[in-house]
Image (cartoon, rainbow, N blue to C red):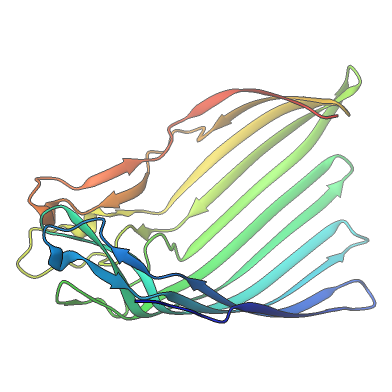
Length: 270
C-alpha cells in the first residue's frame, strides 16, 4: 500500500499598540502508514495501517500588564484526527497497531508570570482538555465516546522563584513547584472490558495526583550549583499500564513513575 498527504502551516498574528499579540494558526499533520508486523501469531496478523492525518487549529493571545510585572498567555485549540494510529493488545499477549477512524481533541491553556517585588517570580498554568474517539471499535467492542489514553481533563502548575540573598558574588534562589494532574486512562478501552474476556481495564489508570518539587541554587554569570528534590512527598503513581489479564495472566502490567529523587547539579556557562 502507499500513502501521501499535503501538509503545511498557515498562521496570522497581529501586535496591538500595547504590544499585546493575538494569533491564529492552522496546521495539517501527517504520520506515514506502516506494515503491522510487530505482533502476530500468524500471517493473518500482518496488515497495512493507514496513514494518520490531523487538522489542528489554534487561537491565542499574549500580553503584559501592571507595568510589565504580569505576563499572560492563553490559547484554545482543536485537533481533528482521521485514522489515528494506536496499539490494541489482544488475547495471546500480542499488540497490534490499528487505526481509529475518527477522534478529536480540544481544550484551553493559560499561563501567567507575576513579579510582586524585585527578586520574586510567581508562575502558574492551567490546562483543560477534552479528548474523544468519535468512532472506534476494538475486539468487537464499541469504544466511541471514550477518552484518549494519557489525556487528563485538567492539569495545573504553581511555582515560585525567590532570589533570597546575594552571597559570594552570586544569587541564592529558592524554587518550589507543584504540578497537578487529574485522572487519566492508559488504554483506549478506558474502564470497559471485552465481553467474555478476563480483562480488568479499570486498573489501567492513574487517579488525580499532585507532586511537589523543590530546588535551591547559587549562581553567578558563569556557574550554577543547584540542590534539588523531586516528588518531595513521594507520591506513588503510575505512568503506563498494559492489559495482561485479557491475555491470560493473573495481573495487569503497570509501570510506576519516579519515587522521591534528590541530588546536586553543577552547570557552567561560557
